[in-house]
Length: 490
Image 1 (cartoon, rainbow, N blue to C red):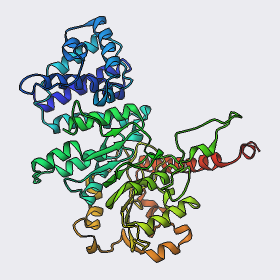
Image 2 (image 1 turned 90 degrees about the horizontal axis):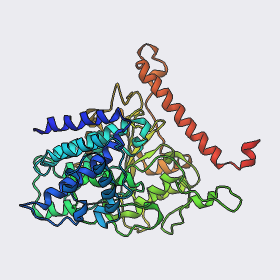
Image 3 (image 1 turned 90 degrees about the vertical axis):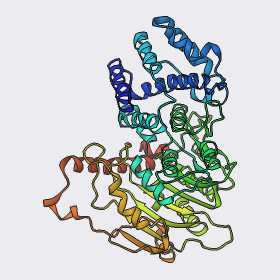
């Protein structure tokens, strides 16, 4: 069976399971468990003969030899047993559950996976299949998986701007399903690039490092990397299931590419003796942070700075509030402009993220020595938001829509940049003289304000209104969360 037919077969079975109430996310998890076991089985056979560390009672042969209720019972035992194993096995099967309640359909899925030789498929085919399922899962708004999914065309453009070199480390402290890792992997293995043996080994084992606090999402990330030939069946995972913000990084990296979770408050809530939420407990006490704050994005921004080597580079997706917020936000912005070379800001259009109400930007900056000098000379801002209209269904953001920005960024030589209608340079002195050192800068005229004959289509217009309302609602929630309970009641 060719790769296209196989992908279609996997998809079709997913639709069959959806009739039983099994969503893309649940299907993806079961596919992960079974694919992992089948691949391990293939690697244990000639000519590989590898020790995959999977207990004999849990290997693939035990699954494919059963049907009906015995299969279901055995599958549950396998999931539980493997979840207690160390390293990659334990990470993939951590708290694993069977979501396919019909034993006959579970048997069909086992047979379908058993019928293929997965090792013989190239990494692109396996990876594209899995990435396709991840995208479908993100589009399923009920699952909430969209919050972990950064548009792949945006990642591709960001990576093309940064242009990571082989033999260098790449980190993401909130890596989700591994989108930035795969974007960098695709860049490093693109057509025309020949990696030597040492570079290939480094790419497979020592390039990517991440954190993902949600166990199920970490599982998808590890499998996504593995299917793209990153990591080993029996190796130690380089994606930790932990909150990256809790402590200083143990390692410094050459590149940090990230889209930290939106939402300003930490997910950690602690109840005090009176049964009320202790707001002070929502902050991270880090000696290496410039400011103590409960704003999650500001904490991630400070953490990312702490992760970089002196020669390190970062590209981070951040919401608008990070550009203009006062208090800790202003102090962190001033420190960032002073201690790092903050050179580029891409203002993203609305309607490109699965989480609604998101107004976001990509901030590009380089780490610099701590020598007391001001390292930002000025910031180039590209406005891809004003008079740009996108939706997730009818007018999706495409790679071509970002090409003008990539060209303007001038990855080969940033000193050759030229100003244009959408690309402007703002001197450091002018930026720090602005109220709160705000980077929330616009200069283009919004044509829709007075050109009523050329408004966007009704569906785009409706979605933009929803985006604005959602963003306003999120701001109101933040204000309300900061008020004393007595003021809210009055």
